[in-house]
Length: 82
Image (cartoon, rainbow, N blue to C red; front, side, top):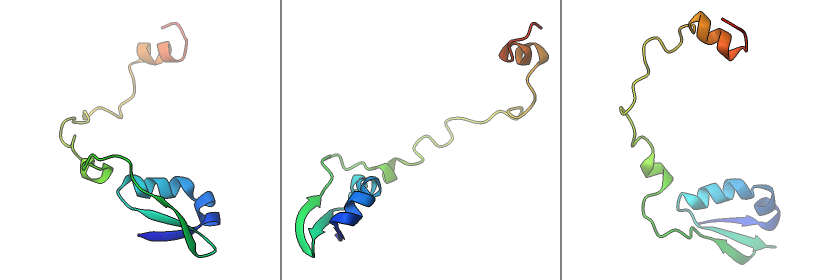
């Protein structure tokens, strides 16, 4: 469990919340005295780290992905008549 002071908590709140979302508990202190604790509210054991990569190999990028668009389609995107 990490402890941060109030100024650090205000300055880095979004980063602290990301850490809490991953299961970490963080204590907020005022002049070294603990006054609050950030804890995750979800009871789901599946956190963001364990869900990373679950869609692996479900999509293959086509070989022609970076090829130029056909002229008529490109013209349509650019608002021109083909």
